[in-house]
Image (tube, rainbow, N blue to C red):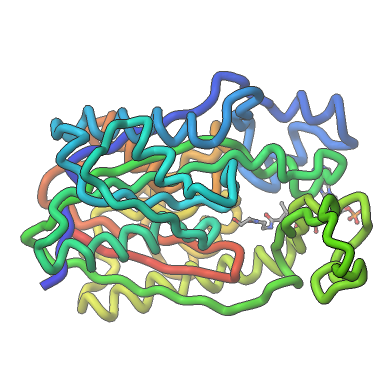
Length: 332
Ligand code: UT7
């Protein structure tokens, strides 16, 4: 039986807050539009610290909360789509800075679904008994990848990190993971290869022809309406499928933690699934969409508020670029 227990959670958000009024000083937008269309009032921006700094802060907080020593961590899984380096992996940087001297480490990139995929992966590593304590850290510094002349996308995203220490649990867990490969139509961010000096490379490559304008090659490109539609459908499907696998009904779940993309996406899915809104955690008003960090940040906040109790059955659901989606049901 596959089972997990989350024994510690932690989070970190940068100090600098960019509220909707700040956006109205750089773009043709305003607080009324942004709040009514997204539910977001402000998001944090890591103005001077790298992604790995945030990841390390969240990881240290989760380890302190768990009460274990960093040397007892056997594996670190880092979820990110905005690393500071191609390599080493973010998880290796975290391993170094937290002193997890006995841990293996690798990264998972499935954008906003990263924490769900990492938690599912962790549960499978915990199965065979070789790995006892696994640190999952999801951390995103999206500001360098957003186009701050694009009022549709830049207003959505924030920076931050969340982490969880996971051990094998004695209650079953279930998951549903999905990918619908759609590389260029809905949401993508191309690696900037414009500084390459290999004389053999051709400028008009397979990838470059999808880029909107030369000046924007390295920025996130998003078709908001397409992602919106995908997100509502994906959340519906993932929750329905994972409940079917768990042989549970929606009333059996004590708490739903969705990816925090847009309050309207969450409301639409909650309505069509018939979930009681009071069981659905929403924190995007102050954080915006921090991609893979949304769900573990919510876990850490809920835990700090004393709202996660032993025996509770929790459903987490994520969706994002890829296009990927997934849900996990577990009992704490
Ligand atoms: O983790 C996944 C990441 N991505 C997402 O979750 C994105 C999902 N999509 C969305 O959240 C929404 O589609 C958006 C928030 C991006 C856009 O909301 P919308 O209700 O779909 O707006 P729209 O694109 O239909 O635009 C409506 C109008 C347009 O003006 P016109 O053509 O009607 O004159 C836009 O130009 O709103 C305009 N608009 C804005 N106006 C003020 C777009 N962005 C803004 C803005 N401020 N920031």
